[in-house]
Image 1 (spheres, one colour):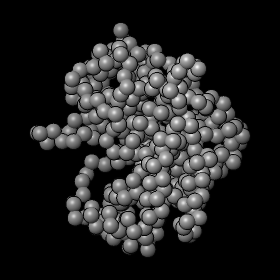
Image 2 (tube, one colour):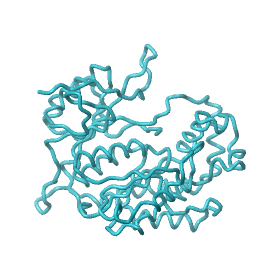
Image 3 (cartoon, one colour):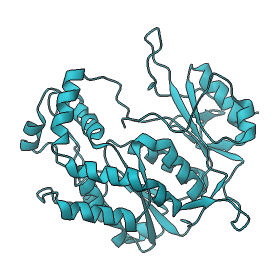
Length: 360
């Protein structure tokens, strides 16, 4: 069997007793007990990446899936119209999207970026939107912590001051899902209603950062992807003083009421939303169509025989686990599992039904 080369893994787990941090890798299998009700085979998957919602991690997985399955994928660079990130020197994603030739979009399988809902108007194929929302205060504080790292503001700067300086904006999640690109437009009941209507009518799958693995598991099952090994990207490890966090939470709560209501809507209706996409396997449904003999590796630097790979035969499952454990990694395996995988697992693996909230 070919050798599995060492790869760098993230260090996002809680500190160990000695103060060090264990690398964390997630293994997420598809659901063999569910089958897709609606195929995305002849459509373009559009991932609406809202900043600081673990979207970079999902984008890396989408890119790996495209490489593995021979799909055409495009990540549009640039900042979000509804929420320009601090210190961004890029053009707006919607402007860069407008420069893409029509023939490039005509046969595109996967599209992602900080794009507003509505880009489907330029794509001749049927489009199926997916997105991740995040608890608004946690998302806002994560973005607030980005400012000092990009030298855009101080950690102690008030939210009101950042608003006046137009470095942040209220209710960015509602704005992006509503397709609102005018930063001067007030976020109100009508904009919230537009965002909710878009989620209900245009989005095939709406997940949350807090239930990232559950969302990924649904995507794997729906899109026919192999089971996935992944690590998180752009995760902040620095912590905030408790008093500062409380003060920021109160200030951000005051300018994100509509984001809070959108998030509440999603967390309340997500089970019903998912039921329109997947259903239990029974005697009347076709068997799941997924490459069960393959593993998807969403690592930027994972190598087999000295070559970077994004997928490999399932026979490498155990060598990959051994390789990761050899680096001291904590492997978080999300159930349900295939029986042959469980037989190879050890008690040192942490099994979860969903992962801990990320801060990407």
